[in-house]
Image 1 (tube, rainbow, N blue to C red):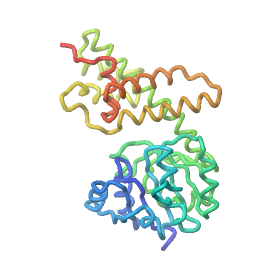
Image 2: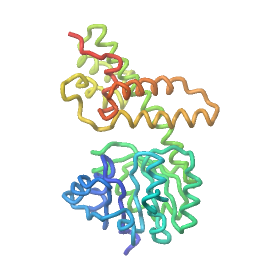
Image 3: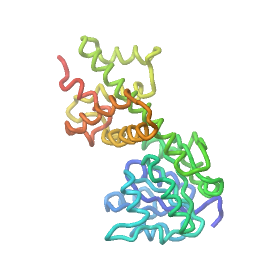
Image 4: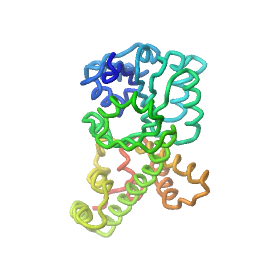
Length: 302
C-alpha cells in the first residue's frame, strides 16, 4: 500500500468518528468499527467498510484513528479490560495511532511509551469543528508527535483538516493546546448564554439583540454559532444536537485539572464549568450545549 494512501482504521463511529470515516473513505481504504451495531449500519450505508471488532479493523492498517469519549475509553480500547485484550497487541509495526479526542494531558506520555513498546507511534491530534466540518475536511487540528509519526499520519490528517497546527514533537502537546482552546470555547458559550438571557430578562427582542451583538465588538464565534440555537432552547424539540452539553462538563473538568496542576487560578473557567454542571444536573447532558441558557432562563418569558 502506497504511503500516500495508507489503509486506515477508524475506531469510534459516533458524531465525529462517522463523518471522519466517511470523508477518509473518499480517498483511502478505510475500515471502521464501533461497538454499537446501529453506528456500524450507518457507516456501511455511508460507504465505509466495517469490521467485526476493533482488532479486526486495525490489522494491516498503517494509521489507526481513534475517536472515543474520554481517557477511560481510550485506555480500555488500547490496552483492554477484563473482557477484551485491547488493540495494542494487534497493531502493525510502525503504525500511527491518531488520537482525535480531547482527553487531557494526564497520562498521555505514558500511553505513548506503552504504544512505543509495541512498535506503534502516538499522534496526539485533538480536533475542533463539529460533524458537518468533519465530513467536509474542514477541521481545526492541533498536533503533537514525532516527525516520523506525523509523516505516517499526514495523508489522513490532511484530508480532515483545513487548519493543521503542529504544536510540538511530543505526545501531549496537542492535548495541552486543546485544553487551552476548550477553556475559551466553554467560557464563550457560557458568556453568550448569560448575555442572551439578560437581553430576554430586560424585555429585548431576542433575535434583534443577537443580530446587534453579532455585528459589533461583543461578537464571538460561539455567539454567532450557538446564539441562534440558544433562541431555540425553549422550543418543544429544542435545538439540533451538534455538540452535547456534557462534553463541556468533561472538557472544562480537564481545564480545571490542568490549571490546578500548573498552580494557576482560572476563576472564569471555573464559573463556566459550574454552569455546565448545573445544566447536566437539570437533565440537559445529552442536549445541545447551547441549551445551557436554560439554566439561566428556565422558562421563556412572555
